[in-house]
Image 1: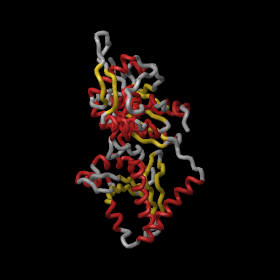
Image 2: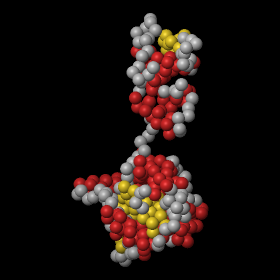
Image 3: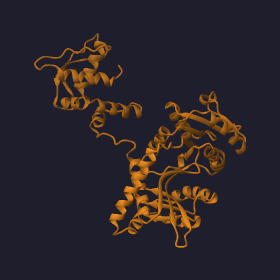
Length: 391
């Protein structure tokens, strides 16, 4: 007989809610007496309830009659009675394919409430705010969380030199619990190169909360990227607490003013594709150029730096974006997972692949772009994006 956890919960709560001194009569709509008896047997066997074995030759399965709960049973009931705890435990069990032990169920129910998925991004935003405030205290003009050439930039700083010229710096903030590695530099350098080539930035800087690896520092020298430890940045405003506080208030006020003006944020595209050099042109020339032309902000899966589970980060990005663009070339398993997640959320999803690729049967029926070259992709993607609803 199949185990039903909701029936287990119903039985435990019903027994606890029964007046003492008599065995409870257990009957639940949608469940047969055999099912109730079998689940009562499981509860007695697990030490959650006391009872007597009432199994006989005609029984469909082992059965028990519960008299009352044990001490452990009352503890289990207290946890199971909380609807939020029960839902979290069921989600955790279902995500693992349903395999668990009774002790495992109690541990899931006892687990503290999960922190909201946004907490890590909120910490990251606070770190960006602190970086922006320091530059503001040093006399620079500062913008936080802005879109430059279709790309989200953490902080943009404009400073005046002694000669009166102005230098614009794009800053990437990395609030890691470990030194930032070479991959951070490799991902930021091409983006800074794009900005510099278009005259949109003079310098590119990465600020990290816990410094950088040796490999990252060596790579940054070759690529013309400045690396700054947050502690060094803080040292620049040491002894200027009042100025820093005033700068923080100015940064906050600037965001409040921006929100009050009703300035609409650009719609966001999240791109999923294999992490390989052969896809750089597809992303930079075939997707990003088109998206920028149409006023979208773009982010790719491997642009995301994090300290948490990458899957959770990607899922959050898909939930927050307006359109997902997924390149199925190479039949990458991660890409297909992210496509499935986006479709399950009914997110607007544009599928692309190189001509000649074999597409999985489940996705063949979807209207996808099969491109022969970058020019072909740009033309067709532009038409598709214009026809795709978004905010």
